[in-house]
Amino acid sequence: MGSERKADRRTELPADSVRTLAIVSRILERSLPDMSLPQFRVLGLIARAPERANHLARQAAISRPSLTGVLDGLETRGWVRRRDVDGDRRGVALELTAAGRTALDAAHDCVQDRLAELLDHVPAARRDAALDGLAALGEAIEIDLEERRAARNGGA
Image 1 (tube, one colour):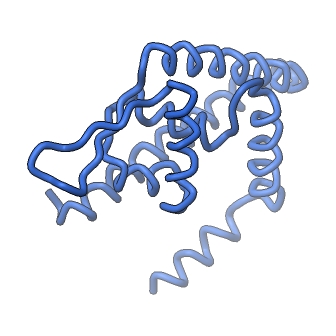
Image 2 (cartoon, one colour; image 1 turned 90 degrees about the vertical axis):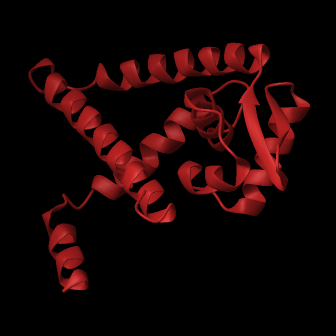
């Protein structure tokens, strides 16, 4: 039953939607002057809520070994601070530094400017629909993250 529902959802998607998302991701990454897209994602997640490193990989959509490399780079640049978690010898909490906040804000501005440039090519009559679609996708991502967190925490 689950695989049938997945197949049905796939047929509902416009053929180019996945390709478009991949291309937009690459275009936006190129707009980042001083960091990679994974670094941008990780900084953004840490900025929203300081996280333990072991929960961050799934949210950032990167492997744990890749996350270690991203965090090493962010820490070297002074953008992220790792802290030991009291009562958990293996636990590491992550927090954004002031320099990390500045870098994230600058990167966000660059990505937002580039996205605005792309949207300038969307006919005015369709621009609101494009923005609504992006907002809806963002909301769906938030719901998905919450469901995955709840499942990971045993439904709590």
